[in-house]
Image 1 (cartoon, rainbow, N blue to C red):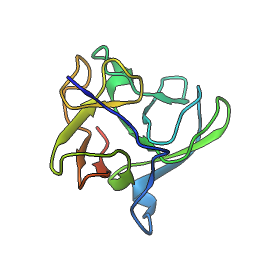
Image 2 (cartoon, rainbow, N blue to C red):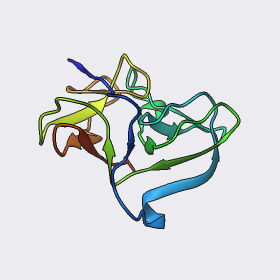
Image 3 (cartoon, helix red, strand yellow):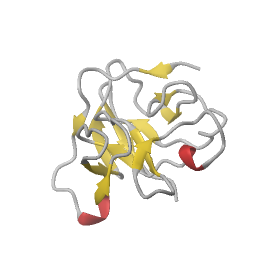
Image 4 (cartoon, rainbow, N blue to C red):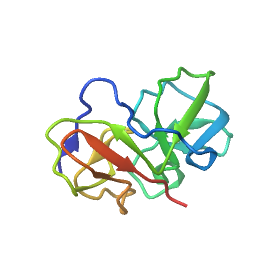
Length: 131
């Protein structure tokens, strides 16, 4: 399994987000970087998703498109394109990483068994959420 490295600061590549493509009004429970996969914890705060175990932290609800510190408001998105990496293989599926919290890998992890993104081209990914 190989981790998918971010290239620079990931940014939104979709235009005109619909309200159904983003979640607002939540607070970050920890520092979250742009492009991190996130989940909503039982305390109501947003944390980086983690595929190390098959638990609530492995259920990706979206991806942060701007960074947030613990205690700050956070907005995350889904069903959108993000500028994410470099040298990506178009059509390749990406899974929640089991080793890099909030990251992506090219193979399933213990908790990240379903793809949560795929490469659109060499630099952009299309991200989804799990229900």
